[in-house]
Structure formats: structure tokens, C-alpha cells
Length: 297
Image (cartoon, rainbow, N blue to C red):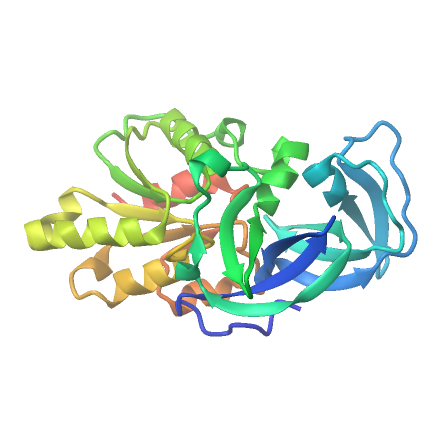
């Protein structure tokens, strides 16, 4: 479903699939959605995580079904007449039960606002106002990582990476997820990186880089040697950030690694089209350290 949509990258737009669970409206980036199915047979798993409804078959492939009703509202009951969204991210396929599909909307990332702290929910990464209603953009990676921490990034993933003093290397981390920023910092610190500057969305990061260029010209590279960016972020996504860096006459020499759950063989062309120097899915955090070493001699 997602492979033919938004073939052009770095436009600052995203396709959002709007769906309903328990009379509330939620959204997911279409790029994560393989297809929408009618649930048929559900095989329950003994002594599994309470958020795991069981297993379903999709073209003879066994897929874990996460009970979104439990995750969002604590409801253990699974209606086998529900629709299912089959997703792929972090190179893993997983399904989620929903009540109904509303439709697909093409919107700008700058129209997705970050949740206010006072009304924040760790599973909601953005709010979209559309047709006089609020659509909650869900953090599906966090939902899966909360159930199975091994599916995300952690310090354990780089246990074989040789530690050395890398404190002279100045890295910029751009990711809207506080969890990912924290895990990324902990992981890179374990490898010897200590000079890390973080931003929670692409627009902030680009403004900082442009400020450095105004003040230091080509010497900006003394302050930032490499950018690691997520793709999905409010205001400015990672593809747009990468394109803007690579279109700038001075900034274009800055290496950019796209580090996202959306990196798959099918979608790698999107990062290439905006000039990314490398692309990794989030579980490949050990390879991330090797790549940084490759780009910064």
C-alpha cells in the first residue's frame, strides 16, 4: 500500500492514514502500512504480553497482532470482525486491530504540531487538526518497543563495538522521540562519543546549521561533523532536512545519516533521492557507530 505513494521525497509532505479506535481518531504514516485486512483467524499465545492479541496468517506468513484497544484504552477484548493494519518498520512486520478506516490525507509536516506538555501522552507524537477534529499521530515504534524492547535500539546492541575516545567528534542528533534521543545518547556515549547536540525536529536543526554558516562560513564544520536524523518529525521531516542541507552550497559537504524505522529495501530510494550519505534502520545501532567512523577519519 505504501510503496507507490509520495514517490518524491523531501517535499515536506506526508500521507496520513486516518482510522478510528474506540470512537477516537488516530493516524499513521502511510509509508509504514503494507495493507489493510479483514481479520480472519486469530491464534492466541499462552502467557504472552497482555498487549499481544495473538497471531494471524497473512499469505502464509505468521504476523503478531498487537491489541491496539488494550494499548490505548486497556480493553482486553478483541473483536475478530475488526479490520487490521499490517505494518512494516524496523524491518519487522506487525499488525494492529482497529475499528474502521476514515481515509488518507496528504498534509505538510508543518501542520503536525507537537503535543503540549500538559496534555502529553508518550504514545502520541503529533496532533493534526483536520475537518474540525483532532487526529492523534501515534508512535507505533514505541508501542512495539514497550512490548518487546529488543525490537528497538539499546546499549546492548553495540556490545561488540570497540570503545575509544571519540569526544573530539561533534555529532548532531535530530529525533522527535525523547526515548530514542535518550537511547541514542546512551548508546553513542558507550562507544566514546560525548560531544552530542540534540534537536527534536528538523526545522530547529536547520536553523542552527544556518546560524553556524552565517557566523563561521565553511568553518561551521568545526562545530558539527555529522548529522544523524530521523524521518518522521513534526514541522520538518528528515527527508526535507537532508535535502535542504544538500542543496546548500556550504552545508552540502556535511555527512547526513538517516536513522529511521522506515528504512527498508523498498524505501531506500527516498533517502538516496535527497542526498543522504547513508541510511540505517534503528535496530542497526552498532553499524551506526561504524558508519560515523567511516565518514569522520
